[in-house]
Amino acid sequence: MEKAADFCDVNRSDSVAFACHDVVKLVERIETVLQRSDLTLEQRHEIAETLF
Image 1 (spheres, rainbow, N blue to C red):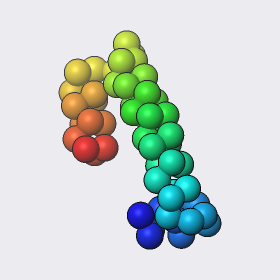
Image 2: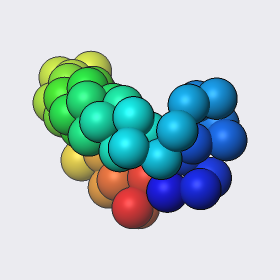
Image 3: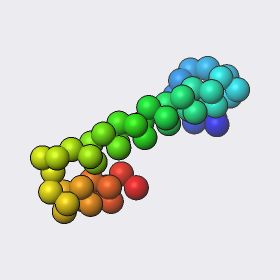
C-alpha cells in the first residue's frame, strides 16, 4: 500500500481504491491483447508468461 500511495501521490486508503480500479482496466487490456487473432498460440503464451 505504501508503494501504491507513493506512486499515486495519495494516502493509503485512496491508493487502494486507485489500485482496484487500475487492476480491472489492466486485466481487460491484457485479455484484449491475448485474444488478438493475428497472434500465434506461441506468441500468446510468451506474452502471458511475460506478464504473469
